[in-house]
Length: 167
Length: 202
Image (cartoon, rainbow over all chains, first blue to last red; front, side):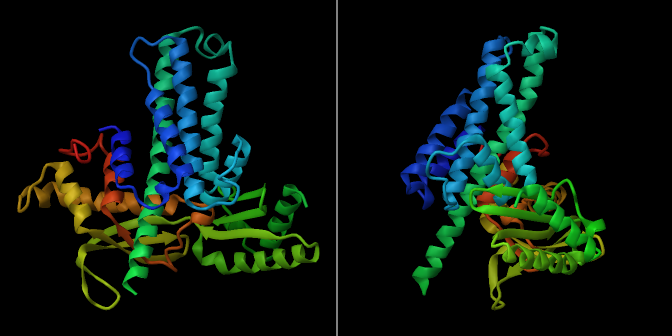
């Protein structure tokens, strides 16, 4: 089962933070990019590059949605990569920040480093494909972790509302 | 104040309080974000937290003189030593919960503690479905119970892995609840290594 299917179930529950259009919009965009973050066994260089780039942006939008769900100041406006890394460093620690930096590096190479295939993989698309598949697994785990964190915030808010209602 | 100056100040105070040797340099961080300065001091030994807090109090006093505000976290790295099923979980008033309780022993340098993880019945149902184990099945003891133990370990390790302002202090907050949603996530992460598993809700 794809994590996006779990995500769909989650979204269908229409729980608390997701009714905020900004968060929902971010998550929809994250999901849409995540769906494009894949390639087939015979994928060429451009498809692989595109998957890595879209994959980073899926994590980018999921992590911004997480900050929004936590009501982090400044998360509802435009936020650049460095600002995001700084905020994630504060909220989740250095490990999460470093991971975001590494994912951005994947995306930067995919989008801008025109000579990457020759320089890093001696022109072998097969090697690039294998390496990119491993990187996509890391991206995917990070994407899922952000969704899980949002899910947890949602549960906590739901519990707090229930407690409030029962008092 | 620059981040480097802040780092030097914090390191100096940690050294002055005799706790620098317990600093985890890789995970500790010094940041200048839009809300101001932020320091996360991560220790390899939770028994040294009081000295580190004292050092940070001294840092804050110095910064106040310069009208600089600082957010900070002092935490320790913990490891899971053991996980034990303790049976039916009870709430704070002694009332049974719809959950199974686990005692999880943790250690961090010279400090040990025990936390409780209550796994909800709905989370257990999710696990049984994923493993294809029905009610009263003999496979539960041989297959399900060890998987559940390892998932509780995963859960605690995952919670302990969060740093920054989201860190979990297992001494201050020794009870965690593993819900159905949390179980779905853990099962998804472990889908390749489940003994019978076909993944959550497949």
